[in-house]
Length: 169
Length: 228
Image (cartoon, rainbow over all chains, first blue to last red; front, side, top):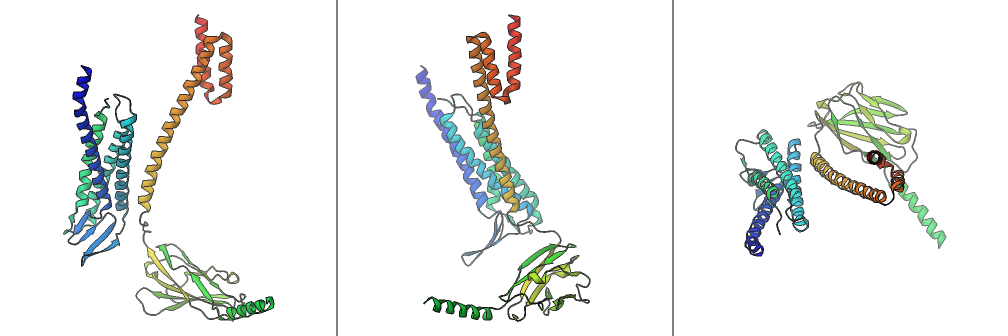
């Protein structure tokens, strides 16, 4: 009886596990793109922040380092830290998957993932608040900015799932 | 063979000392804050001995101007700052000519002092060579270099993380050791009465950090024995 119940639950557990891993990997990839792509603000062919101001000329790129204001460096640091913490939490999740006792919760994974979401939230908020000082009125926010804001709820939900999730079998 | 080699090297050295000109060394750029003092350093390299007639001359070309003006001259053992001009009463000679240092100190900087300073040194008979230039930039607030804040934030957070993990593992290790020593003392007590307490005394002596814990445990055990 117990075996049948276990077998019936197994695919459900696998689906939940798969969905959790996919969510975590998605947020990790989004964080990587938001941190590395230099397109937080665009103006026609020019994209600004987070690291360079790049202009597309004749099919090639002409990039120069941006002014590096204090707040921009803080945003850079927070985004990098969020990416690092998300990566660390994924590695810890894989470790805990094999070493955790039955019925245990993935606390370490959740802690790092929630810290990552806090960092990306702080970074996105700082950028949103401070960039109007630099922005011309004709600038629009680029895709990396949108991805950064998207990464925040994804990482938060992922972290909360890890708090609730319990290791069975 | 050896004599030919020695002769060649002496001739070459003689030629080299005559043909190598004096080389003037300065910083290429200097950043300073408004109102502060800045030291513009200038030194030279020459094959000749430092002559008593060594001379230093400083010129200044403001940003946007075409001509340079003379602002300082040192020669014949005396320093002569220009008594007219933008640096009147603000220039001081802080160099050491016998050590080949011809640095000047400009006091109380202003935004109008942005420009290019040229240092020219002469060490008779070595008078050929290029003067060297320093670009002076005066700021209201020294700008933070790119990446300094970024690196420090990342470093501090990762450092804290490593510290927390290290402390966590240290606490676990200490607690495990304490549990181990307590279980050892319990075994001793079960086996032989007084010898158990002696064993615990011995373990307490060998581990002075746990003296307090051992003493409290001892008191508890003695009270238990009294109750019995």
